[in-house]
Length: 331
Image (cartoon, rainbow, N blue to C red):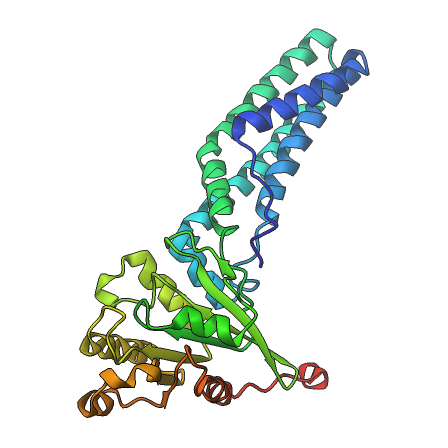
């Protein structure tokens, strides 16, 4: 995941203390004018290099981030605001170098007292530059902390997303057909971790994702961030399985479940959407009108295992994934 290795961003106070303490040590190792020159060069280099490293550690959102992670990041931290902060920090890095270039010649052909005066002036200006971007450094570090918590999903793997109201059997299905067994990852804006599992077919690795808190309720009940996160999932999903509980033992009427199914199908209109009626072992509580209303593509029972493998194979067929061969990438 492109955000997991982002380094901690220093505060302005931490960076100033680091630069000036290192500069003081550099000055003690020398004397006269050379000491003042060494102190200025050390402080300016540390400030400029550290600020530049803050910026270059981040990926280029346009070219390095998959659209899934781009939209997810934008939902959490506002990518445009983050870019602005990174731009301001890079400005401060360049400004520190300019201050060094401006003052260093003044420290060469003068007496020590005058050189010390110029060096102190340069230090004051360096500190002022760093303090000017303190809010931006804080924003960048907050964004780093938030984005490091994103789920480690590989957007390049063929992905099946499971949707539907709570308690219809989504997590049981994911656990049953994969090695998930409760494997979860965290979204910063949901109370429950997503369900995540993997399986292989014909040497191809597939991932199945269940997103509680996002696709388990109608669009009107999602806040702005959650809605944008659902938009991000549009870039991730290669197939949608919308699971229903016709018995309504999940606590939601079938009509409400069908309305959610229809809203998901409308939003993911470019992705195959399969309607799966779970809990056939409870068929005694179904009736013909419910069967007709569901218009389900497949029925199954995760509880008994009936048709579970059939549903999984149907999802794989709907994904219709063809891996890119090495010689095709070179063309």
